[in-house]
Length: 134
Image (cartoon, rainbow, N blue to C red):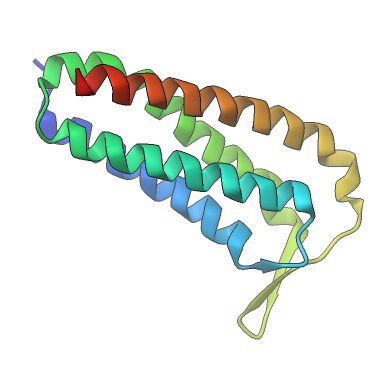
């Protein structure tokens, strides 16, 4: 039987990673619009993760474990990929983080791929929330 605290911890860890990536984007000045759009997608994912977190507290842990493991893992991987993509292009000076490179245009295909992955992540989380709420 799955430990309900491990499920809650997994949701919390995934949410923390998503919020970390979102914070990196939100605090970066002069980021391209495509990067800002990733931040908006991360906000939507964070909202779904919060809802899922509330549902995991009162659900059957075995069923919940089966429902949420894969979507959470996918979301966590996406947030790590976003940080990996964005981090080389930002620089912090005097406590202000700014977009620092113009060569990012070559990475736009990576952004499109991440947006597609994030859309799938949102769909999977929405299904998990709906299934857990039944």
